[in-house]
Length: 84
Image (spheres, helix red, strand yellow):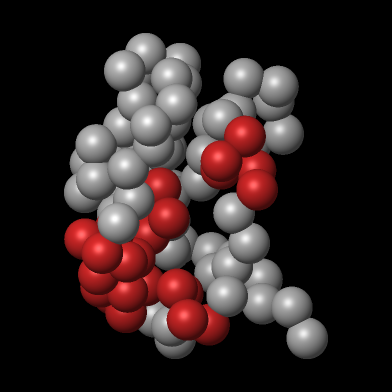
């Protein structure tokens, strides 16, 4: 069964870097920096829009990166980022 995103998590919008340009960050997004498109309720303002980076649309939640809580997801994604 496929894992679905946890409401209020957004770890994937904070921990990893994004090397491709995105609106408001033409040089990409550094690791550990919340995406500027992350709204106060931890939803993406670009979700479903063509300007959303491909890497974001391609990300698939999985237990090995998402864990069971937002805190665990932040830790796991940070560890993966540090390995790359």
